[in-house]
Amino acid sequence: MRVLGVDPGLTRCGVGVVEGAAGRPLTMLGVGVVRTPAEVDTPLRLVAIERGIEEWLDEHRPELVAVERVFSQHNVRTVMGTAQASAVAMLCAARRGLPVALHTPSEVKAAVTGNGRADKAQVGAMVTRLLRLAAPPKPADAADALALAICHIWRAPAQNRLAEAQAAARRAPAPASVRKVRR
Image 1: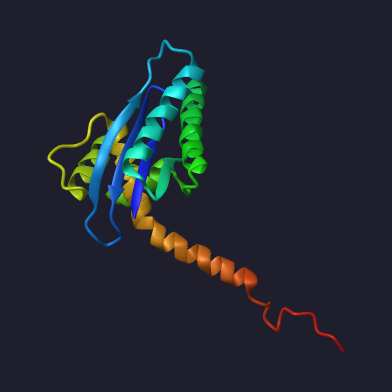
Image 2: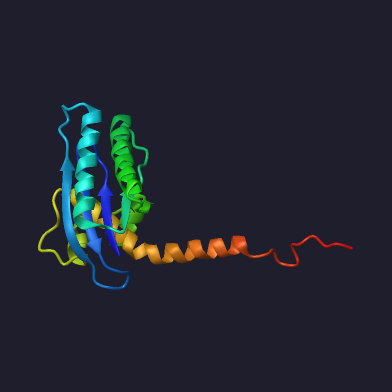
């Protein structure tokens, strides 16, 4: 499975591509950051992010895009920019018919480090180790994007089995004890 991880941000949008399967060694195919200057109007910054993500999609041809789920912070301005960049990433994937998976920051940290409250340094260190890199990707947004891709690759098989079981349960007839009895 080849996954493009996106750590959304208006100034720095981390992107990273990881290929592999759960239980097997993973390979980093690319990592970077799409940057936009703070002094540029937001609509133009979003266009720049869209162009950057489209370039990554063209170059790496992922099967899925994993995006960090935006969560509420105290700074509404930061949340808005993050949500807008997240929407751009989802739009780029949807336009190509690629599935999108959303993962919370604590879900990603738990998957990669074993601790849902790990700090950025711990995430960077584990990404470096898991992908057998010489040094942690910089800035932290790039490492976070790789962590998103790793999280999805590891969690996808279980999530798929759960979704299949839920779909099968919806299709199955109700047990006799639940059916209305006719007399």
